[in-house]
Amino acid sequence: MATENHDRTPSVVVRGGAGSFKQEIIAGKHRLIADEPVSVGGGDAGPDPYDYLLASLGVCTSMAVGLYARRKQFPLENIKVSLWHSRIHAKDCEECETREGMVDRIDVEVELSGSLTAEQHAKLMDIAQKCPVHRTLTSEINIRLRSAEKPRT
Image (cartoon, rainbow, N blue to C red; front, top):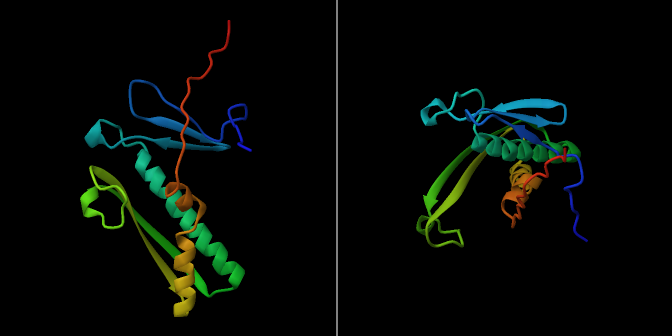
């Protein structure tokens, strides 16, 4: 059974004026700012949208690895996840299904510190690619865009 969500309170609300790229993000009780770099006409008041996308994947990856290590009592001390976004020619991507045009690529580098065995390290790297955000980004995504209903006066 499909779960419809347009009658619920939104998880995230983004507000901004038409005069600049700067946006206010409200996620529960948290307030964040997004913007574009000065080089593309923004004010650089906050991360750009792709930085937030990469941050979401990086945070989820780190959280999943840390949770697994705690549950299994692995001697993991610290996790560092570094991420890059680029666009590449599809023909240059051996593992991609798409063969024409451009493909988005996200490179993720995971650094684990602690006295882990080779097997523990390998298991944590396996877990890293199974975090929920990773699975979402690599699955079919259905985004439904609709106009908000204006209140009647």
